[in-house]
Structure formats: C-alpha cells, structure tokens
Amino acid sequence: MPYLKARDGTDIYVKDWGEGRPVILLHGWPLSSDMWDAQMMALAEAGFRAIAYDRRGFGRSGQPWSGYDYDTLADDLADVLEATGAQDAAVFGFSMGGGEVARYMSRHDGRGVVAAGLIASVVPYMAKTPDNPDGTEQSVFDQITQGLKDDRAHFLRHTFFKQFFGVGYISSPVSEEILDWATSVAMQAGLKPTLACAESFSQTDFRPDLAAFRVPTLVIHGTADQTVPIDAAGRAAAAGIAQSQLVEYDGAPHGLNVTHSDRLTSDILTFLGR
Image: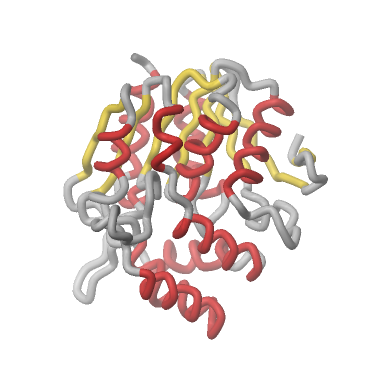
C-alpha cells in the first residue's frame, strides 16, 4: 500500500516496514519520510511496525493547492492511522512533524495513540511574541521565505541545510553528500507547499494543545539547535506536558536524526521498551 487517499482526495505516500506494535514517524520540513530510514530499519528489526509517510506537498505525495494548515495535516495523520489499521501506536514527530502530533492529540483526542515523541520539534510555539520572549524573530522567517522565492535550491543547499546540520566554517558533522541529498529531497516538494508549511510551523501556537498529551511523551532536542532553538521548543514543551521526559543532546544541531542517528535510535527504542 504505497499510497492512500486523504479525506480530501490527496494522495499520501506511505512506507510500512516490519510487523508488530506500530510506530508512526512524521518527518521534518522540507524533507520526506526518507529522513527516517535509519530509525525505520532499526525499529522493524527490533520487532516494531514502522510507518512513515510523505506530508502532503512533499516527497512522493500529492501537491494540492491547499491543506497546509495544522488542522488538515492532523486529519491526514488520522487518515493514515485509520488506513493502516495502526492501533495502540507510538507517534513521533520531528520538527514540523511535532506540530502534527500535538494537533492530532487535541483535535482527534489522541485516538489510538499510547505514546508520543517530539524530536527537535517546533512545539509549542516558534514565534517571538510578548508572551513568548524566547521565540524566533519574524525577520528570520521572512528571510527564509525570501530565500525560497529567490533561489530555492541555492538557499536550501548553502544556507538552510548548513544550519540544519550544524555545519561551520571549519568543521562539519555531515558530509557534502548529505547536504546534496537533503537538498534533492527538499526539491521534490512543491514551492507552494514549501512556503505554506513554513508559514504554518512558524505561526501556529501549540501551547493550547499541550494539555491534550495524556500519554508518556519523549522530548528530544539539541542544545545547539539554531533552526528551532531549545528554550522556546523542547524545554517549553517538556514543561507543559504532564507525562514528558526531556532528553537534551549537548551540542547537537537541528538535524540530529543524522548527526546523532545511533543515539536517537537507541533512545527511541529504550523509550518504547518501557
């Protein structure tokens, strides 16, 4: 079942590996479900059923004109859970994907979910406002939008993904090939969904959704994350979720799924084995 239909008819590409208790993995912006391959293999080999899908507008999924708000994206997650028959699932969201987990928990009352994970997630609120002083200035989001419109491939390859993976002037935790791969995956997405989702994750306030987390929740965040800084994200999310466990990766950038892949896999498996 490589494709399923969302309730509005959008084609959603799904990867379904292994057998056992289901673990749903939601990818970050602007990548695809392929970012989870290392974790999916480990989960499947450990006796879990690993399910990941390309967000609408990204990867191999359909690219409709609309539907990039978090209510619709949470409905897509609900449709994936129903179509795959996943029950008693653990649901992990990376970066933008954390917002889909949060909105699903509130909008769909966490139906079928027994554990959750927020990995380098945008939850609870990225924007800097008077009541969210640790958030990110609007000018940063404006620069991302302009970079995408001016020369998307160049911006992603030479600006965004270098920050994403913590690449510096002298050293880099990832290869040039990883930067090339990430750019190629990101360029599979449509420009409209790329821009629309950037607006959604930067402007959506998930603080009201936190009370809907009524299951054990693993929160993992890098202390050197420049893309989604930890104070307004991982630390704030953990403070607002009753049954949360915060694990900080000292010195890790946003793309810790690559730079700290083995540790992330181990922490996820340990959490699921509780």
